[in-house]
Every structure is written in structure tokens, then in C-alpha cells.
Length: 512
Image (cartoon, helix red, strand yellow):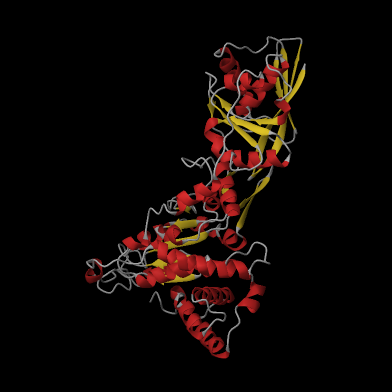
């Protein structure tokens, strides 16, 4: 007897429906075809044990399982439940009328319990697109799939429940999620607040500009000046995610199996802080079974690279293209996948190996030329892609000992949201452009018009600092953001002057 059940294969951050055909005939063999990997082939033993431990059994006949389309490689243990239900239906232990209306996925333990799987959100989106009635998945994944509206989601704890559901013995409870409530709960949940930071008002101003325009930023200063402390508070002033952004971010985290305790929608902007020993593949993604890297996990959020010069040069150079294109393509001989990578890069570094170059009180003990050599660990093209270079100086004692309240993240975020709203209206006709940092070169002529005084000021700065054409674009974008924060229609001279200040590493002789 032939029965068809349906599962799903995740490729990149999208899914493809997989038809699992189970045929039972005379004989005693078990065949599995359709390009399954080792984990899929091992499902036979897991299914056998799970059914026996629930007083059910695999029929002692020839079972052929075909997974179509046969040219897509089937990976992982998520097909256990799909195959098990197919075998039970083909051996007439399950009524099969309703089976074809559902996508059925889950990893089986030997006692029949269902373990969580990766990539549930893309699977749910594809199931809705293809007109399936619902999903039957492990309980732990139900909230994540329920984010997709218009499809029934049933979270099950064990295989016995699935069999009883199809046989009409029990009814399963649909999983529902209130998306608005999820957003509101996370919005007020600020772990790191700018109110905790004493002094550093100029740095807070620079980070506010970065958040308002989505600009990349690097903080340069001695140890203990507060670079990491300030960076960790960056997500608290970023505008809340829109539903589209939240769905796309959750998709990536779902595929990587990183939804963690949240389980439902990822509503807070990600903050990823990889260690400097990270490999190229771990940063951009890839591997034998392609997985998103740190830059994709930071999509719509912040990627923080602490002690930037300590990262391997090759690791930093692979970031160049994703920083410009906001997408990373992993190409191998057998496959090619694309992951979104629209992130804000935040980096911090000491100005020299000893950490005290340009320090107001302590003396730098580095030998001549060492400071420049240390800075040269970061290539010019990468520095060009960072819009704001900000010098961080230590906080003096009288600032640290003040008891007065400083501005909270909530107050700063309100100004950022207003500036972002101005940008959303400005770029509503431009696909893929949401903030000033994403502005294309042709848009600069339209939105970054300069008067004569501003043009002369920028020309002088370009000549004195020896800035590249890309640095020129960056200054214009930052100036546009400063103007937006002040709700100014045009870019004024003071906006350009402030934007030029944020190119510290371009200044001649900065490193002696």
C-alpha cells in the first residue's frame, strides 16, 4: 500500500516541501531513497524503538521510503515523525484521510517523545503558501510556528498523540500567539541602560547619531574608558523592530537553532559579540551543512567586535562585501545559499598595543612605528566602511562621583525613532533602503544637497585629511542623519562640521 506524507527541507532561510512516499509490499527489507544523509537513514532505528515503546510496531514487510524531490539533499533527524506516520498509515494503523493536509515534522527519541527541530518558521511560511491546513510539530517549536497567521499549528509531546489525533481518539489544542503583546513586553525590557553611564556625553551623542542613521561606528580609547560598556547599551536606543524585520530575524535564528528561550518571535534587535578567535566561516556562515554566521545572526541588529585589531586579518576582510551589499552569498561546488546580513557594525580598539597612546595622563611606552603598525592591522578599505570614528577618553573622578541622573536610553530612543520616521518617509519609494546608512550613491545628490559654505568646508577637509571618495559619501550620510535629528530639511554647515569630526582615524599623523 502506498501513502504520502509531507515534510520540509530548509535551504538558506527558505523551505521546500518534501513528499515522503511510503510503500509496503511483500518481503522483509527497509529501503530509503531520495538523497537522505546519515541522520535520515538512522531514523529507521529510532522509529522502530519509539513505536515498540508505545505498544505499536513496524510491519515485518518490505518498506520503501522515497523522499521527493530526489535532487535535494535531506539532512538531519527532523523527518523521523514524517516517516513514522507514513509507515503507520501504509500499514493501516492510522486512518489516512487527513494526513495529506498537514506538514508533519519532528525528531523522535527512543521512548516516542518529540524533540525540537531547526527552521520551523520558514517551514510554517512555506506550508501556508502551499495551502496546507496545518503543521504538526514538537511542542517546543509550536510558539515559533504560530507567528505565521492563517495556518493551524499543533504542538505535540509524543508520537502516541499524533497517532491518536489522526485516528480521531483525541483532539489537539491549536497554538496561538499574540504578536502585539510579544512586542510590548520586550520593548520595555531594557537590560543595559545609558542612565548607568557617567560622563561620556560626546560618545553618547555619536552613538545616538549612529543609531538614528544605522551607521557603523568604531570607538578608540585606552583600557577602562568605557568602550565595551557603551557598546553593550547600543541596542537599548535602537528603534523597535517592525514585524517584517522581526520575522526575517526570527527566520535566521530558527534556521541556526538559536531561538533559545524566546521560542516565539525575536522582537529585540540582536546583539552579537563574537570572540576575536572566531574563524572566517563562523563569522560569515557556511560549513559542510551551510549555517548562518555571526553577521547573519546580527541581521537587523548590532555586531560588536571588541578589540578589533586582535581579529585575524582574513576574518575582517571577509566582512567587506557584506558591509556594502547587506547580504552574504555562500557558494560551494554543490550548492549556493544567500543569507541576509544587514547589521550595524560596532567595533572598539585600543589606540596602541600598550593602550595609552593619546592618553591625557599616562604615557605610551610603545616603540616608534609600533602605533602605526598596530593600526595597520585594520585595512583602509574596512575603515572606509565605518562611518564614525570616535575617540573615547577616560572619565575624570569628578564625573564618576556625581550623583545626578543622566539621560536614559528611553529618552535617547525617542529622538532616534523620530529621526528614523523622517527617513522611512523619505525612502518609502526606495526598495531595500530604510535608513541613511543604506542610501545609494545616486540618492546622495537628491537628499544631501550642500550650500556653498558647506561644500567649501567639505572640500578643505577632503584635501587636508586625504579622504577617499567612499569617506566623502560617509560624511554626507552622517551629516544627513545629524540634520534629521534636528528635524532640519537641509544639511547646514554645522552638520557637515560635526560629521567631519567623526573621521578621527583619517587625520594625518593621528598615529604619530
